[in-house]
Length: 575
Image 1 (spheres, helix red, strand yellow):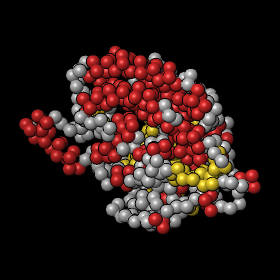
Image 2 (tube, helix red, strand yellow; image 1 turned 120 degrees about the vertical axis):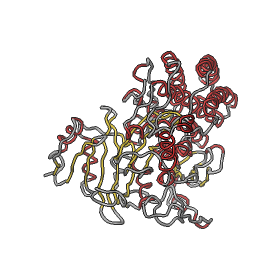
Image 3 (tube, one colour; image 1 turned 180 degrees about the vertical axis):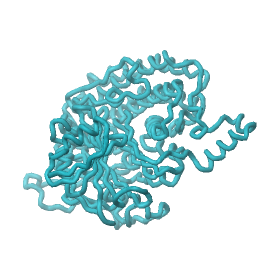
Image 4 (cartoon, one colour; image 1 turned 180 degrees about the horizontal axis):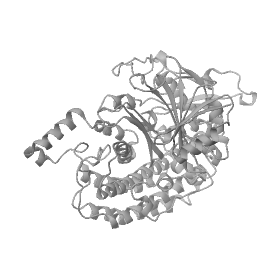
């Protein structure tokens, strides 16, 4: 019989516990009530628990959101040094759940769950690379973010942050498909080609090794990590607010959304609220950032297919939005405008007028692009029926955002779990069912129009005055004038700068709708001035993992078009 530990839990956690009780023979499972219902199990029971969570009709946790490791070496109260943390989502019930697999020993081993959730493939490789977890049965367990000459596992707590390892030409990874000779007989003239990493069509940092039969791709393997900087290790060596500039470098096409998602996660751990005016400014700039992101995605994608004119049409509104953001914070690309508790400074006096001007100018550019693209034969040939991802594939591969919605799943965090003011606005979630490149284009174009509608409604209720940041001086810097003339404010200022914000001990996963899909931050605090563990959920990571499967059977030119519609963002992918 299964052993499900008994302790008082909330209703969602109680439902999980009730379903698990007795359902998995000879398993050890407990359910805790943290920020999410949290299941703890051991490596032996993990595959059975995984299948139950996916297949049980009242569970249906079919979408693997994230999988990560945690090293508890300097953390009190945990039963072992290492644990695997998995976040799952049910697309039919709009619910999240967390599973922790408690691992034994210094070099833990546990079964792979790639056969349960194909999305686990690259996530497990990442946990192997950065923590040394060995997943038995994994189809291709090797490093993914660090190079092949890297020694050790960078996110272990006893690994020096400043350690570096040289990578030489002899250390370069050679995929198995390059040396393989047992290709099928009808591929008698196959040839292996490298696409990228330093090529405009691969957007700079993605390497695709493909075996071609004529122009058709018969086998492919992707390699990433060329832009890896270990965002998570850097975050652990800085204060909570010093992490914000690093979040800019994740999805740098919509950096402000990263700021907001990270800050809101920390704010919820602190239990503080941002004033209404600050929250609305965040919403407005986040939606403008989403428009910028989609403009870059579609504009660059169409350039890859030879349609240069659209690039100019889409980069004009992007530049004008950058003008608005620059007026707010002085920066354009990596903005660092968010702060835990609000914003780094007040918006300019003409903020509303600038926003309304953009609302008037952007629709014309979108209409012009649509007129050029929607009936263009070249675009049709590259987009329609190409790069098809079915609904089940999209869920199995861990897709989110516009790519998931283009495959018929209407999951949008802003609707499923509204935050800020999204439940007060009238807007729609665009969904298409074809799952091809054209569907992904159509979804992004409509999402930009919906974002404009959200901004218009947000401006209607934006207070003309009031603070944009919390008044809690434990979290937000006091005004400079008070620091100069008031001893208490001077002390707050000193402690904020020298010690950083003190976040209570605990852990939390918060999720938001980034431009590329669910952007989540899993944060562990031990009560100090710095994060103990931070793991962003990179939206394009699982989609790039699936790319090498999607393009098999297509031509090289079609693969480039598909890559663009999946929207590779190297900063987020490699971290």
